[in-house]
Length: 154
Image 1 (cartoon, one colour):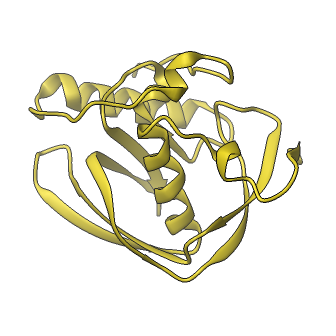
Image 2 (cartoon, rainbow, N blue to C red):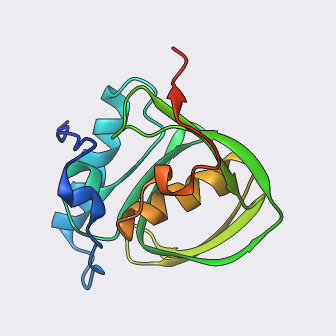
């Protein structure tokens, strides 16, 4: 079990665009597993993008239904509806903002074995897909705020 150090607000890597993963090998699988371990060991850790642990690769891990979705090169292929969300981020402890997100979001990605997968998320999962994939493009949830940032409730 290996955890990675989180990167926090002000770290320039959070604003950098992540690069596509060309080959899914043991090194990539180890990074994905380390990201999952980091979520396990982080209070309120639900999802994480690779640049949040200092790696500029298009990788995302989401804790979902008692397991982890390990996504390589994810892209949003469709979205619909709208929902207002209260949103926070591991890289911005104590910050919470209201955002407007799609009610439904579909993604295409590869899993850790290189197989193409498609997933559709509703509600919270749609919000999560959008939040994490924006990280991969150097965007942060504060960019999507529809109101002032407020302290995160503990």
